[in-house]
Length: 157
Image 1 (cartoon, rainbow, N blue to C red):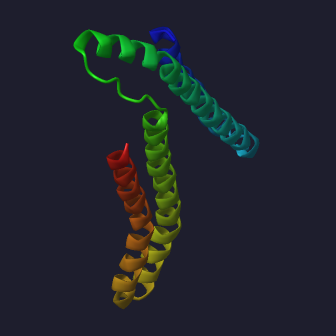
Image 2: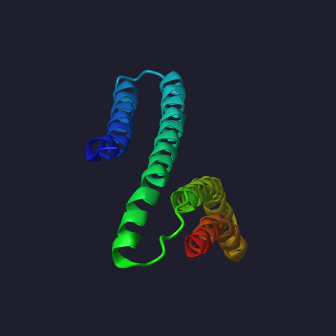
């Protein structure tokens, strides 16, 4: 696949998401309800995630098909054995990215729910600051667990 195709995999979803966010912001500034627009944004985001996954898998599969011939030719010239080609590297990188992204989203949701409650509890009773801080930190640790798992995946690839 060409470089143009790989660039399109990155650029097209970014442009679509920016346009979608702009449309939502515009509707909000007009004073209209953004419920329907937010559902459209979520559907667009999910479709783009699926598209990027499919294109990444297709690129990984194509690299696997084309790699053995190139590796064999290079190995014959140097007199070494050709390394076994597999798609585990590409899928491992995809898995590490998904783990980090999904854990970050989960951590963000947890902190978004816990931090305002912690602030409210602390404003009512200053002695509850320590307990509130623990709950916010637990929400943030979800993202850190995702990073640790992705590092473990990257060490295996």
